[in-house]
Length: 427
Ligand SMILES: Cc1cc2nc3c(=O)[nH]c(=O)nc-3n(C[C@H](O)[C@H](O)[C@H](O)COP(=O)(O)OP(=O)(O)OC[C@H]3O[C@@H](n4cnc5c(N)ncnc54)[C@H](O)[C@@H]3O)c2cc1C
Image 1: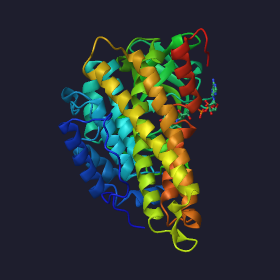
Image 2: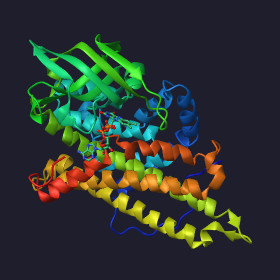
Image 3: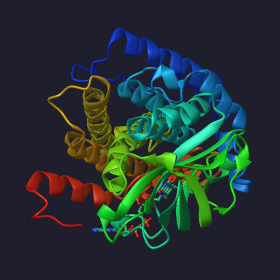
Image 4: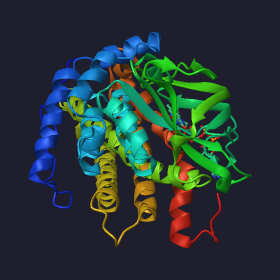
């Protein structure tokens, strides 16, 4: 099945609400070209090969993405970033997911843009100088590590401890379902995560955030014991866990204030969730076009196109509405992130992002899951073969509906809590 992304299969309506500047349109064009050249021809092979062995990480592509300037887009050029906006990172993530709807490559975008940007907000100049340029050059990975085996939604219940001893913190505990465990080991410089651990008493006020570097300058630190999982989709980006046994980290890697880590990581989540949702939107566009392509060739019952039956065209129209709504939520949140963090508009603050971002992250993963399931059914039996790539988008994007970067119910909780007030809504 050969797919050309540039073939227009759907007459998209003219957009009046979502408008992009000339520079943004040019940037989208450049990313699209990169994707057509380097991602479209290989994404199925990447998904196939890493399904057999998760450590089959596409390091070549990773380097090319860095060369193209796709990592650390919103970070400052003094740290090797692109001095771009968050909207630009969102545009790039959407395009990458449109080219790789199994979304492993899109996850590189969200981790290596969202979390280095969060690092820039909370990290010292010295730590940013050390880490962000390596991420921007494609020599390191920087993601997020909050989830633990007892349950990822309950961040306030994190058990991993970080005890201050002189100029160091000593870590003990376990993190699970963490993206990038293989990348940190395989990339030449290494990297790590925006990691949250307990430095104080119980609850969310006893947590601190760290630029936790498991590997620096090519050297893996002692006390870090990783495992790699076999995921059901989005192959090409590893997921794994690690046990920390007396892992030592210099105190300079503390992010923001001690025991304020819960608030810091929530800001980071707001940023990363915009890009997760953008990846869902990109994959939705690919899926809608695969549906259109199929409708225009599949004929049944005396030669009628299957889309001539309302049982097919009506759900298509409904799912298209979900796509437009998802796209609107995503770009509204991205523009607001720019107001807060790039323009530093004093009339908005980081908390103002909570509801717009949660709307995007609540909506887009379920919208793409619904669409992918329906496209699978429209393709009939062919969808159930490995020759038809639709299932790759279905399994890959489902990672977001399950909970990568926050479960759906947690998004609903955030929306209800912020709309009604925390005294009326509890997790
Ligand atoms: C592919 C993939 C990649 C991931 N990458 C990372 C990563 O890089 N870093 C990282 O830290 N984590 C990562 N995660 C973990 C992810 O953040 C968690 O899956 C998520 O936070 C949910 O946690 P959990 O899976 O432990 O489910 P749980 O927290 O145990 O929740 C289980 C179910 O209960 C529901 N639930 C929980 N609490 C409530 C409540 N109060 N009210 C109503 N319903 C509730 C949830 O919605 C969910 O459906 C990844 C997950 C996946 C699938």
